[in-house]
Image (cartoon, rainbow, N blue to C red):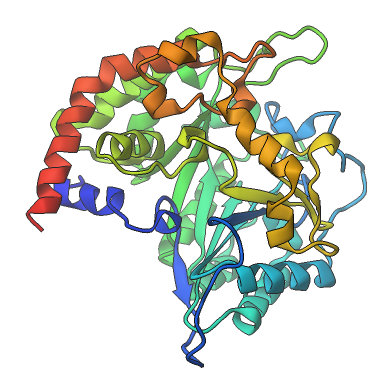
Length: 408
């Protein structure tokens, strides 16, 4: 169970690039050169070394959409020149902290030798005393002792996709050969834990699990899984304009959040770290949120596809939003592209109700991915009622944390 001081320590991180789920290693001081950033603002990379290739066939996976520019039966893998160009150019412009996120599909399909080259190039092209962070999201099926030792050696932070107990996890998550993957994912988690690898759990809230917040939370706590992130599943049928069957409804998501908060709050002594709640708490404490959905603009990261193509957001890997290719254009130049500024500013395009909404100071119009063609956030009413339901308790927690900070 976290004490107030422990929770305050996580919320009060000074540098927003060090907030959230990240581990870092520091490159040696080999020269007195000054680390400087050639980019306007801080930027993290979300890299898809195998594009959307995966060893699972999750029914709710948004990567399986027909509009994916890289959709094919061919295997995708980032080649050495693209990898080397990406790391060398980014680290020279990133400033004090260079943050790499590795995602898929399933990024471990790239193989461990690929990631050994990643670390090698980071060490070669990094600047003196630069901080390097590697976060990797995986379904856990391929994790073994070799991977775990590597992650531990180079301080990778791992996110593992786990939708709860076996009957819930296997409901929509199936391996490519048709078998269920719960037991193999749990084995991967045990391997990470045995090798003292830092990790968290990413759980997708769908039409089934949205009705079981207590069961989910009890399962995670009972298994010692106390670093949690929950994301709502919403996929719209392009032909009918309606949410697909596995998507969570507004009402169910509202109830899920409220019930989850009740069990998490625990009389002001939370027993787990839940990313959404800690970001809301940071806002109540007058600090900047770490998740992009609650920032006033998009643009805290860019997506790098396996071939070097760059996009402004993982939800918008679409032909109309390609910003260029990093093998042809530097990252600082890509950041200045008009199309990127246009995408980032779209977050401020609000629905009429946002103008007078008292909760806009938290959500800042929400994530673009969940917006209807009319501009309204699909989960707007769920969040509004959740914010209202939890306001007093967030204020109490914030007051206690600020007091703990002031007392040192």
